[in-house]
Length: 117
Image (cartoon, rainbow, N blue to C red):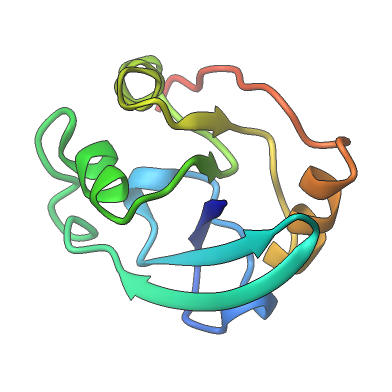
């Protein structure tokens, strides 16, 4: 399973979750096998300065082979794009990516709600 996190820095699992997936400077992508981490990649958000056209950022995440997108907040249109791609959107995450990953694995981080900004 590939899980993407919106990140404020390129520090991998130690990075802080960004509160808006489309406006974050980086994405941390974690490859999981069951509950074991098999790999961690950090990629720059190519739409960071422009925010992209509707659907561009979810499309970019989809191209990475991601199955779950975890972030602090996300708008309703982005959630719809992720659902169309078959990617599970999860909002409400905060703190370090490693902590959010632990919460997701343990089932304590699930679901989404839309933000207005």
